[in-house]
Amino acid sequence: MEPVARSERKAGGDANEVELHLKTLTNLDLWRLHGDNLLVVQPFMDSVIVRGEGCYLVDADGRRILDMAAGQFCSILGHSNRTFTERLQKQLESGIHLGDQYVSPNVLHAAARLASVTPGALNKVLFLSTGSEANECAMRIAKTVTGRTGMLGYSRGYYGISLATRTLSKNGENISLTTGEFALLKVLVTHPRVPLSRDKLMELARGREYEVFDRAIDVQVSRLRKLVEPDPSSPTFIQTVWGFGYVFVPDGTKA
Image 1 (cartoon, rainbow, N blue to C red):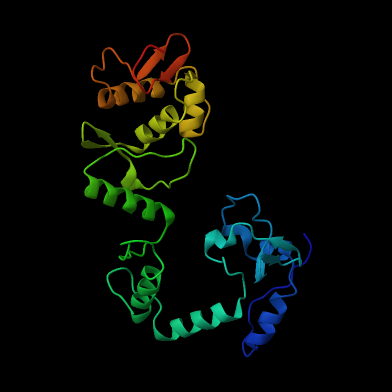
Image 2 (cartoon, rainbow, N blue to C red):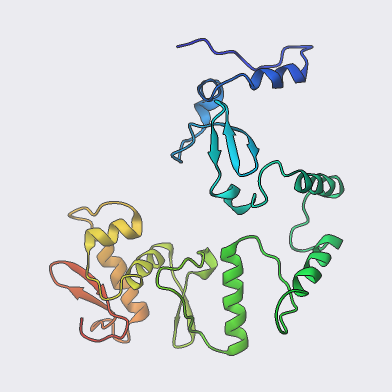
């Protein structure tokens, strides 16, 4: 193994010297020095990002990588944006985090500014953490105000998924689903009238291949039928394709 410069700070050493030394290390150096305990779960983790410049990330080897994810949408103003950094520094000096149980002058000011540009009578603001939470909250408010339960959406649109949204509405009653039931039902309803084999259902719902003696899908389908079918013994929505698998029929007609 090639010798690797070490970054430990010696007694009496200067912190600036340690920081300068770290800047001379490559991606491979850093992985060899500190990488034994990190579980690699993403395809680009070989690049160790040391800084950001505008819409680019820069790794320890000096490569510039276009940040198409914008830091999971947290860096839409770009990295190292001077104005944004100064505002963050000012906020950090007065307080790091409040949660959603308290408000600050900035929260009130932001709500007022947002309400001033929204159309019609939309003059109330609720700040949430993620898009999934925002969509879920909007759907719940709409159901409460209108008294209706149906939602119209694009068949392959993304509206966010959170544990709290994993419910099934039947005759106006919300029925909680397990993670497995939710995953399987999602696969079925997003492939209406498309016969799906057991192995395909297993792959799409659970991310693994179907085994010959694995009857988990059949058990899960049986449970779903008890939840969604008027008569589980004679299913009309989740129908069996004999010798193959299952098909979801939205209107309950013959597949």
